[in-house]
Length: 459
Ligand code: URP
Ligand code: ZN
Ligand code: ZN
Image 1 (cartoon, rainbow, N blue to C red):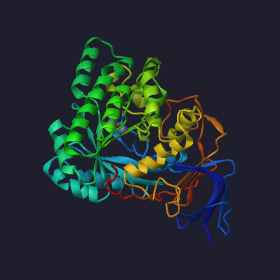
Image 2: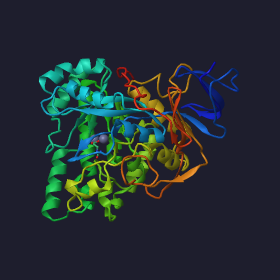
Image 3: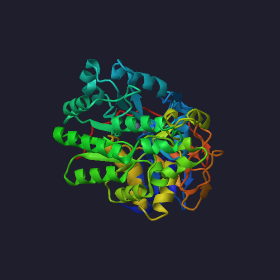
Image 4: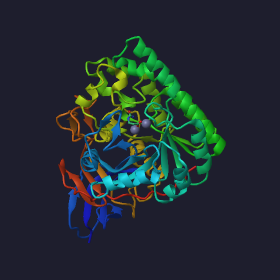
């Protein structure tokens, strides 16, 4: 007896697209085949719809304090909005406070998320202070299932920057230990110098945000970190890559066999710095900033050629009132934009429907690669026998208009207001249970589990 059969759907994997039923037992995919026979407690007719592995959003900031503001979601509401977008697992951050043991930050985030999330989740350890305690705990952090780190190469004023020597020491320490060292790549000196200069010149509007954090700042850090990765033979992950110049450096490194992986985000694939000229230009402020059309084109090409392995949302649900606090000076705007719910429809519409990537590549960048790179496979990111029954079901013909009035993210705006998209899920299933069904939330608080991730293991 199956718990659920998803019938007549078009199943999409990184390699194949085929019509099949999916039989689910005890939260796992137990059978995939044409017209599965056998009783089921429930069936779902997916005729004419694509059945994708659930999206794994590897970069969210739920219940996040940053730039002097606190996002409006918590792990319950944030995970519901992710589920509406077909996300079945997300990776958020345990950001260490100065002087704190990094394990304390993890405990704090676990206490906030466990029992609240409606989908599965994991955490990156976000190190801001490699004090002795934290340094000696690195291996145990990885062993405990937090097998990736994020370090800021910027934000000195906020106290988050990790100096070169510390980054290098971390990479040396983590070499061959199954950790993936991730970076926020923006050269702080360049950004601070340009910010001060623009402020002194009285150029305070949101347009200055892009000028103050140029492509050079990203590319220089990417290059520096790659050299460290090569020297220490430690895998590197570049979070939120925004520029062609940064990508070119990554391509060269990958071609040399250096273990570097990267993600970009929907906003860097769809919006340019022109947006900062709009009346509410501050609503588009995130770091790194939006770039130019040539960057957008290069990033899409990087995805289709496999140099960019993942697209994540970098979701940060501030509302327009919070963003407007910095209206009088770009420097004071809390960085980050909402986006986990719109990740899949944007990538399907702008990527697949516009012929920039295939449907199979969509599944690769949103589910399979995230699972492989972040130690979640084979339970997650795949539609195959024995994997968790995590599915996102989309109707390829249903078009919706993205609007602040219909999104479920805990904010009052979307950077994509008025955009027509396809690929917004009809249903999201986590471990065999509907979390979203035909637009209605059917999940329950605390159904989501913390996922202890495996060590990094691909070269
Ligand atoms: O502006 C952004 N990206 N905000 C979130 C924090 C970060 O650096 O990812
Ligand atoms: Zn970052
Ligand atoms: Zn981020």
